[in-house]
Image 1 (tube, helix red, strand yellow):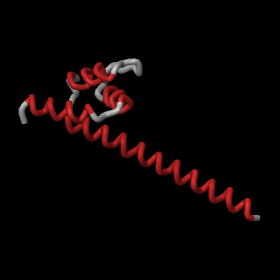
Image 2 (tube, helix red, strand yellow):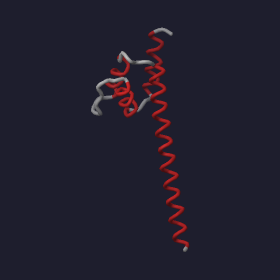
Image 3 (cartoon, helix red, strand yellow):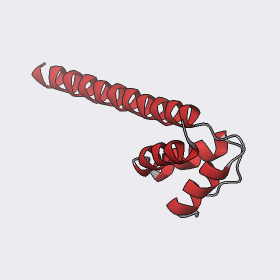
Image 4 (spheres, one colour):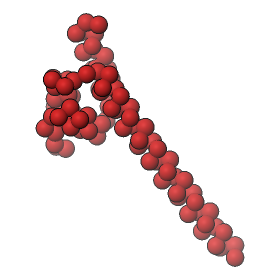
Length: 92
């Protein structure tokens, strides 16, 4: 895979990443990252990192999104459980 091809792949993938994903990723790549950085600055830090690896980037962002989805699922299940409990108390 050529450098240009790898760079294009990373641009496409990171273009879909949220700022929060990029902050976490930058920290995983041992970069100095602060929440006030602009997305383009985060992108540049990630891509020029000596630790940068496209597969690592993809895996990290995918894993982060999966964790967030699981957390949302647990929150929804918890809310549904509370609603059911509240409804059963009203019937009494």
